[in-house]
Image (cartoon, rainbow, N blue to C red; front, side, top):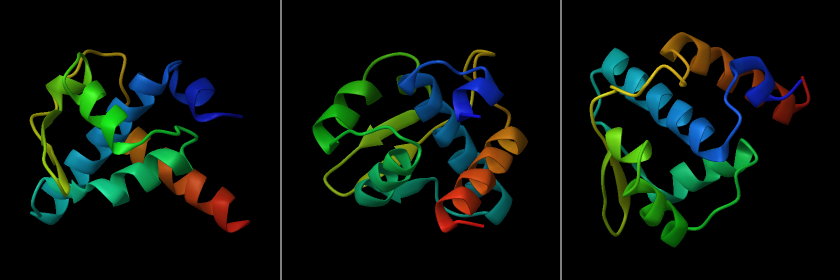
Length: 109
């Protein structure tokens, strides 16, 4: 079963919003900065089956719905903002479960 089938998120953009929502929740849980390197973000997206480069990320980050959760993309980092995305996204718990399942699948467990 694919992530979009489980979560009801049918588009790459929706899955990216779910990823950012997960990262925001994780940062809040750890009291960590709400940013990640572009390379790490692109690798996570690629692991979810979303192939893109930093130029495409910058373009998507300027348009809804990603502009609601990504506040800035500079030369090295992606910065996250408030998690106020419409109900088409996953909860942090759902995103964590999905990422855990994907990691186990990638590790061959």
